[in-house]
Structure formats: C-alpha cells, structure tokens
Amino acid sequence: SEKAAGGGGALVGGVSEAQWRWRRRAAVALLVFGVVCCVTCTDAIVSAVKEEAVVVQLAQELARHEAVVAQTTRAQAKAKEVVAAVEAVTTAGRQLSVATTNATAVADALQSAEAQLSRALEADRRHGHGGGAAAAGASALTPQQPPSQKNLWAWTTSMYHEHAEFVSTDKMLRDLSASVGA
Image (tube, rainbow, N blue to C red; front, side, top):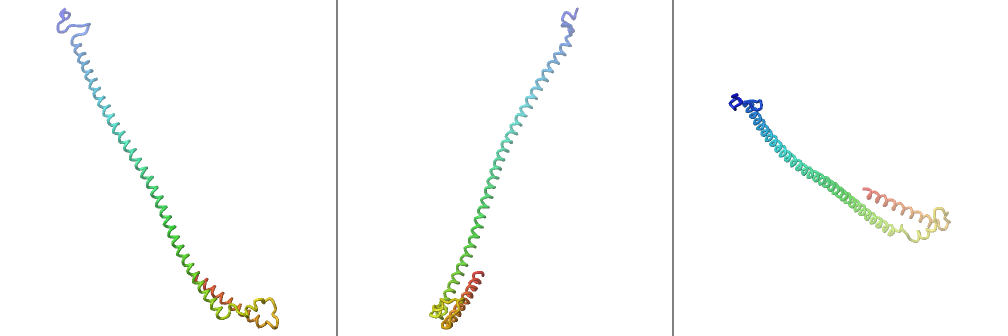
C-alpha cells in the first residue's frame, strides 16, 4: 500500500519509478546519440560537398589547360608548315640562282662562240675562202656532176675551198662544244 501511495518505489502502470528513470535516461541518451550522429553526418556531407567543389574546380582548370595545350599544338603544327614552306621557297630560290648562273654562263659561252665564229668567218672572207669568183663560178657544179675539161680547174678550186671551209667550221664547232661543255 505504501508503494501505491506514491512512495519511493511506486508503480506506475506496473513499472517502477527506477525503471522509468532508466528508460528516460536511455531515451535521452538515444536522443543525444541521434543528435550527435546527425551533426557528424551533416559535417561529413558538408566536407564531401566542399571536396567535390574542389574536384570540380580542378577539373575545370584541367580542361582549360588541355584547351591551351591543344591550341599550342595547333599553333606548333602551323609553325612547322610555315617553316617547311619557307624552306621550300628558299630551296627554290637557291635552285633558281644556280640555274640563272648556269644560264648566264651558257649565254656568255654562246656569245664568245659567236664572236669566235664571226672572227673566223671574217678571216675566211679576207683570205678568199668564203666566196669570190672561183667559188661563185663553180657553185653550179657539184661533186656528182663530172666537170668538163674547161672548168675542171674551177671545180677543183671550188672543192678545195668548200673542204677548207668545212674543216674550219668543224674546228670552230668543236671548240664551241668544248667551251659550252666546260
């Protein structure tokens, strides 16, 4: 009856007061544990979000750097193309210079040969090998036509002059060929 009157060991709904205190402490402990877990989880989530933001920022910087590298690579490829084009133009310029030098040398050799040929023809004319009455009179005769007795001397003289002209021309052409070939 003492317990029923609300003394130290009173029963409430068949449970003693000590059990109620124990249950209350357990409930408070569970509540504190839940709050601590909530705070810890929230802190972990906030830290993860911050780390994710750092990762995203690093990924963006990496993408920017990759774009710069790609642009630099394209610029380097274009620079190599320009260098190759400049080298081709330089090589062509050198070849043109060599060809011009060779053409000038050939032109000089041809002018020299022309001068030699002109001098030789002039010398032939002065010595009577390049024309004259005998050659003009015998020009109608060819080696295939047998000469008559009366113009045998003219024919022989004409043949001699033609042979001399052929030999001097042949010598000049050989000299010209040697000077152009050198």
